[in-house]
Length: 92
Image (tube, rainbow, N blue to C red):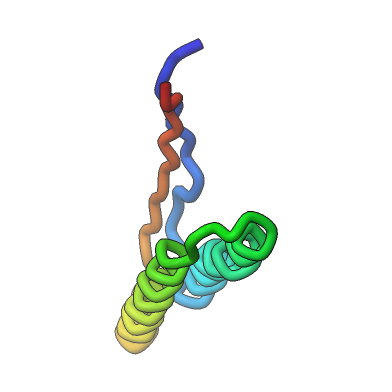
């Protein structure tokens, strides 16, 4: 098996509304992960939450920047090209 794998997650041209739905769902999923899963690990195993809290702030800021970009696209009547890949590798 190859050590590195790359998967195309998003690849297309979207209206601002469509892009907003896709990107917001993706970011919200990551925020929920940090808010729920890591909190659960903290309660059960007393893990440190500082990384998760930092990531939630970063993701919330990214979400706001994307919202602003979508508003500009909407105001200018343009579509958006959105591409996203996921790279997965083994950590030995």
